[in-house]
Amino acid sequence: MKTIAQLTYIPLYNEHPKEQVQDLIEFVAQHDVEMDVNYLSTSIRGDTDVVFELIREIYDTMTIEGEKFRFHVELLSPTKE
Image 1 (cartoon, rainbow, N blue to C red):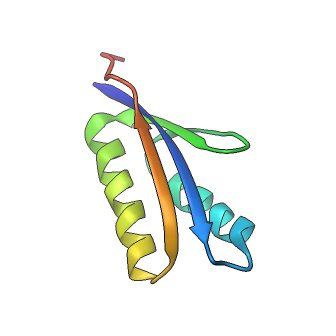
Image 2 (tube, rainbow, N blue to C red):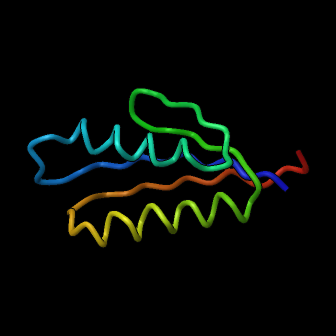
């Protein structure tokens, strides 16, 4: 099954938020998902397990780096393809 997730990452208390967002986009691009980068969010589409693992990996990575952030995730129901 395939899942679509819309991700919005908002760095808080940061002097260079655009750089952090770009780093995150580059990080996501390294994974086996389709990406659609928009002005305020990025949509990803892929196998459900891959999408959920990526969401967790993004969250864990940002937490380890000690950054303050908001991370909004919106999920669409899975499809067969």
